[in-house]
View 1 (cartoon, rainbow, N blue to C red):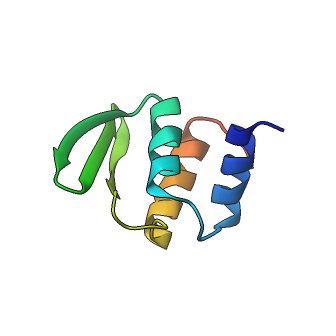
View 2: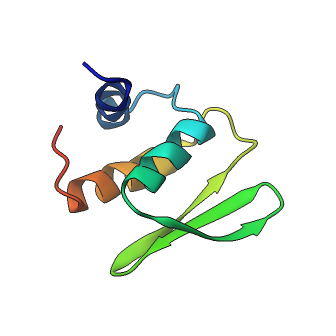
Length: 80
C-alpha cells in the first residue's frame, strides 16, 4: 500500500497525528491551489469547493481540519 493510501486511511479514521505538511500534500494531490499565505496560515482553494486553511505551526492539525480534508476527499470520489 502506498504512503498516499495510508495517509488517506489515517485521515478517514480521524487520527490526530496528521501533520500540516501531510495535509498540504493531500490538498495539492486533489488539485487545490494555495491561494494566499498569511504568516503561518496557508489557504487552499478550488472551484466549487469550500476553501481550506491550514495552520502550518499546528502540529498535528486540528480535528475540524481533518473533517474538511475528509469532505474534500469524498467530493473528489476518494473512498474510505
